[in-house]
Image 1 (cartoon, one colour):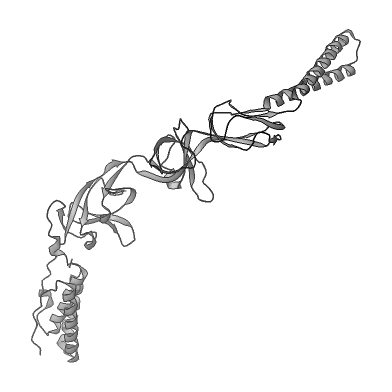
Image 2 (cartoon, one colour; image 1 turned 135 degrees about the vertical axis):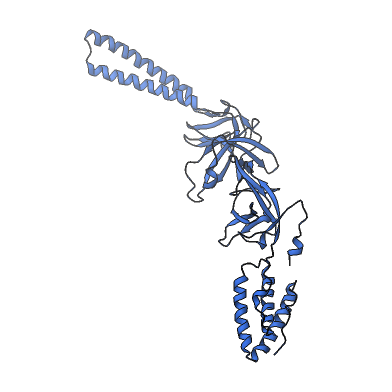
Length: 412
């Protein structure tokens, strides 16, 4: 019978473990070929030993595998000595930690939006005639009641004089009819006819006055003359488009937000818009849509920004920054993130018993310094190095980040 083998040194690298496993396999095949009853007995004992002690081994998986295979090699050597006498010393892994306290933080929403005019109006002709005068060009600033253009109405003054004469005649007849009726010399039917002619003459004169007033088209508010389609000599009919005026002060900043972000927004919430040329506009939310866009399921928001000179146009792309309500959050490094067996994102920390604890987190903001997260208690000891080699509930040796840690000695 082959002399018992002394358990060899545990491999320290993957390559050494692979070579040891190949050697074990060859020796096991040779020993098994002899069908030794003692081998079968020792293999049974070896299985029981591995099952009993696998929970206490706390080393990387390939070292545990090497220990198990070397134990089988010792078994196959034919040793009669019970396996339970092997050392079951627990290897406590070391981790580097960092104390983290939750701080007040206002998460930021970053949206893509654009600038828009706060008001716009289409100017239409309200009478028929030729354009006789144009006083403003498109693209120019314009002020309330400034004349845009004038429409020439043929024979308008003659029509007005004729309408005034008819109204005067109808008024004389009406006054005379009232006197005769009061004396009982005129019937009610004749009086009604005279009143009708008087009212018709009055309406005709009012229509001509409106035409005279409407022959001049003016700006309803301060703004910019965005378009003007009519030129001198153009013939306009009632209802034709003539010009469009836009109001750029205040300038609207608009964007679409998700339903989750909408819950964190309120009227008067401060907004900062950064334009493509790095110009910054400050404003406040003035409108939050009560219903979602049926195509995108997002909500429109609007904010007012000062633009007194109306030099900034609408249609500019803008990166919009909006601060949410303040909350307590931890600032952590992205490298500390972990995923548990259920696919939940979290971080590992060490409790007061030096045991690993897994805390699910919610990422609420990002910054150059790291990630702002919520979920863990207000004060925790975060594992910053070695978190991939430990599991929840495992006892560890924790070393603060500012102290030297012998992690390299326990790492493969």
